Image (cartoon, rainbow, N blue to C red; front, side, top):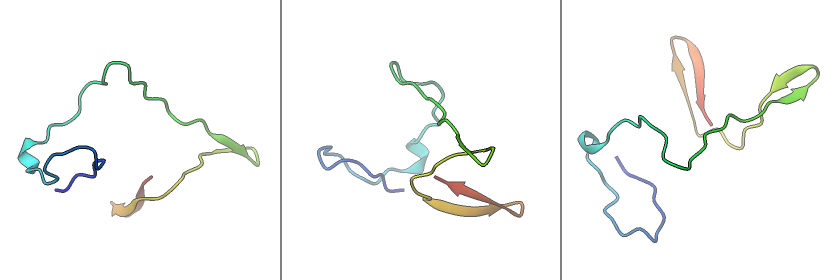
Length: 65
């Protein structure tokens, strides 16, 4: 697995997946806020900057934005 890090960080970019741990708690001072919907023709929609990836799960398309 290769990490995308700023050029100012001087560490090795390849990490063994066995060393990665699942994120459990939010970092102190970090706020995770859901984006607000935009009302279009009476319905709620969300604006996306970019679609990063797409895959099918159980016949439905799932997008990484």
